Image (cartoon, rainbow, N blue to C red; front, side):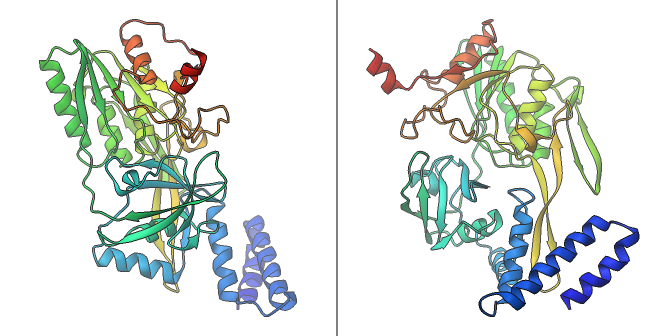
Length: 404
C-alpha cells in the first residue's frame, strides 16, 4: 500500500513539486530493500516509527513524532490531571536530551540537576533516540511519584543516576529588591501568564522608593509564553518594534510598542545567559535592539518558536514547530539566539559550547550577590561606566586563590 501510494503521488506530482515526490520515492525504495534484503524479517511498524521520529527530529529540537502508544500516554496524563513535574526545561543536543534550565526550588534543583546536564537515560530508557516530547511525557506524572534519570555532566564521561520525586509546582513570583540607593533589581525565572502585572506592580513600588535605575535579570528564564514577554516589553518601550512571529502557513504578526502602556522610562540593563530561552529571548531582544538598555551576559540558547499538536490517522500525533519569533531587526531567534551587547561569562554558562568556560564543578554565584560579575557590570553601566563590547571573563574563585 505504501509503494502504490508513493508511486501514484510521484506521477501526480510531476507537474508540481517534483523534489518532494522524488524524496518519497527514495523513502519507498529504502523501505522496500529493508523488507526484502535485511538479514531477518524486520518489524515494519517499528522501522516506520523510527523513521518518523528521525524525520521530525531532523527539523529542530522541539518538533517530534508521538507514536500511538506515546500519544495515548500523553492523553492519559492530561485527562487524569497529572500535575507532578520535576522542574526542568529540555532540548536536544549531541543526540541526547539536555537540560536547558532548572526551576528554583524544584525537585530537579534539589536533586542537583544543572543546565547543560545531559540526560542519558530517563526511567530506564535511553534518550539517544528520544524526542523532547517523549522525555516530557516520561518526566510528568503524579505528585510524589519518583523517576530515575542517568545524568552525564559537562566534562565527565560516566553517568550518575539521580532519582527525581515529582511535585506540584507553583509559578515562581517575580523577585524584586533594592540593591543600592537608586538601583532596583528584578529577577524573572519564568514568563507565564500574569508576569506583566507582577512586573508593573514591582516597578510602581520602585518609583515610590525613589529608585531611578533598574536591572532586569532574565538568566535561566526558559519557560513561558512569548505573548507575555511582549506585554512585559511594552512596559519599557515607548516606541519601536517588540518583535514578530512568522511561519510558512502563518501570516506575519508584528508586535509594536504601545506608548500608553510604558511605565518605566528610567535607565535599565538586562541580564541573560545560555539558559535564557524562549519567551525571555523575545523580551531581551526587544530591549537590546531598541537601544533601550544594555544586554549583559552571554548569548541565549535560541529557541523562541511556536509548536502545534497535530493528530494523525492511526491515533498518533505530531508536535510541529509552525512559526519562529523574530527580533526587531528581523533575525530569527532560533538561528543564533540573542547576543549580549556586553559579554560577561561566569561558571554557570555551560550551554554555549565554549570549551574555555569555567569548570562544571565551579559553584554558580547566587543572583543579586556582590560576587556576581554580570550584575556588577550591569550596575557599573547604569552608573555611567563604559559599556565595553569586548568579552569579560569571570575568574573562578579557586583560580584567584591559586594566583594569590
